[in-house]
Structure formats: C-alpha cells, structure tokens
Amino acid sequence: MPALGWGKSAATEFDELFERMNRFLEAAGAEPVTGAWSPLADMHETDNSYVVEAELPGIEREDIDVEISDRELRISGEYKECGREGVLRHSTRRTGHFAFQALLPADVKADKVTASLSDGVLTVTVPKAQKVKAHHVEITPT
Image (cartoon, rainbow, N blue to C red; front, side, top):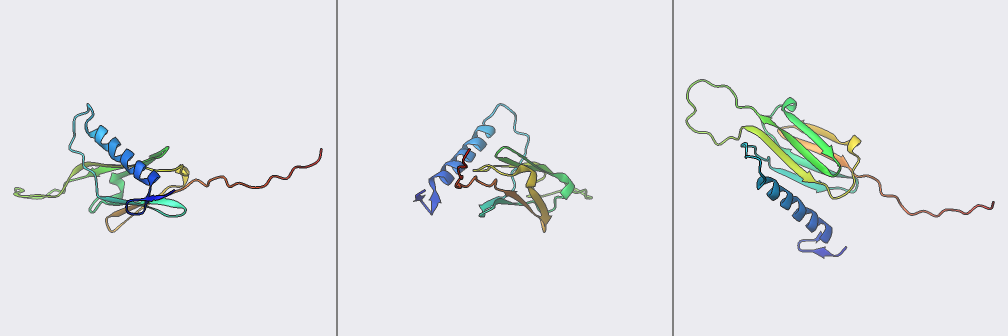
C-alpha cells in the first residue's frame, strides 16, 4: 500500500481513525461517566506481533485485568488510593478505575497473548495469526 502522511499506510490511518471514533462514541454514550481514566500507552507492530506498553505506576498486578476478544484488547483495573494520616491538601494523582482499549488491525492469536508488569509499565504482546501463504498444489493422477 502506498504510504500517507508520515509513512503510515492507508489501512493504519483508517484503523487509528476507527479507534478514535469508537472512543468518542463510548464517551458520548448514555452511560454516566464514572470517573474512569485511561493510562498513557503506546502500541507498536513488529513482524510477528502487536505490543502495547501502558504506564501503570504504583498499580499492583492483581489490580489489572487484560482481556482480548476478536480484534479488541482491553486493559482495565483500579488504582487504589493509599491510606494516609491527616488531611489531603493537594493531589494530582489519578485514582479509581481505569480502562484502555485498542482495536488491533489484523487477526491475532488470542490464546498466545502474554502480559508482564515491570517498573510500572505493563507490556502486552499479541501475536499475529499467520497468513496462509500461497503454495503450489501438485495434481496427482487418479
């Protein structure tokens, strides 16, 4: 496919637009906003997989849920406010429920997804399904 913009293919551009529209429609939905926030995350593609790196500092592994269905990856959980003495006078830290969703541009091997948490960064690796390659079929006599 020909490259557009900064070297992105048209398919990548459409997938990103579709993902942004999904987020917009979810935000505009009838459900009330519950204060959920979305962690900062990057998604990059290798020859064999899609890799999502989400910043989740201070969040315990047990408080994170990773799910995949069809082409959608969802990372959700809760950042629990730590108990402290005294009156909190100022805070800019996010607490409560969080969710990150990514629409993957191709078929994936959902049963082979791996996730690891290190230094506050959750890394989710989603292997691509192997495309069927064309091969020659020999015709045998009957």
